[in-house]
Length: 168
Ligand SMILES: [Zn+2]
Image (tube, rainbow, N blue to C red; front, side, top):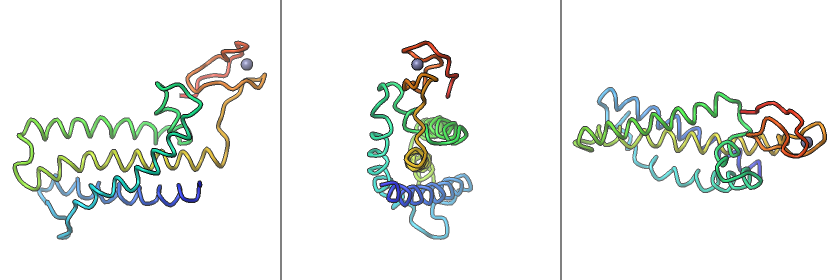
């Protein structure tokens, strides 16, 4: 399973890089970078999100609902987790600007408006799939000194009170 996740994580990263190129071109007023139609990227999201959702379900199954994102991204270094949150805010602001400016007045503004979302969808899929690969390679479930399983948001073991430090 982690081999398949690895392949999809590479696809997601390629999708993210292509989306970034398309998005930056939008700032330069270019709607078709190198004459290539960018809209297949919109469809490509579904290709990487299906395995990403399956991976997220596996990663978060032992955690409470509110920690679903933390749990899904737990196999990544912190900078990847912060990048996901940062891109999420950026995509939201980008779409807000798109909306305030009256939406898709022309192809450039439409592509720029949508490609902000492609960035976060591809990057989040990449991050979840990488997390899945890393977690399956090295079990990152935390335990206290007395071997109780401790949730990611707990600083103290809920069973024996042993300090385990904060993971996030
Ligand atoms: Zn304990």
